Image (cartoon, rainbow, N blue to C red; front, side, top):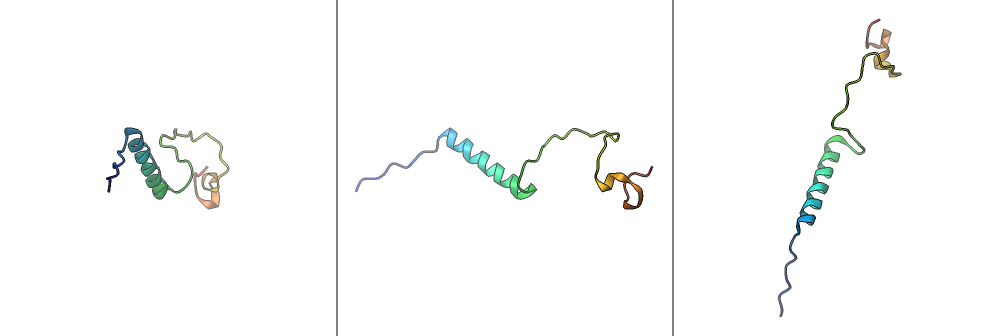
Length: 63
């Protein structure tokens, strides 16, 4: 019986496997979808409709 040559892992295969594993680990940690790593700081003057920013009875910023 002839021995089959063992498939060698190329550098491209290694990089692809590392990227895939990194992406799967990130999705386990943060959940599905896109998550930016460097989010710019938003100004307090920026208008938002979220209840937590409206103030009053719901909390948030007091005016």
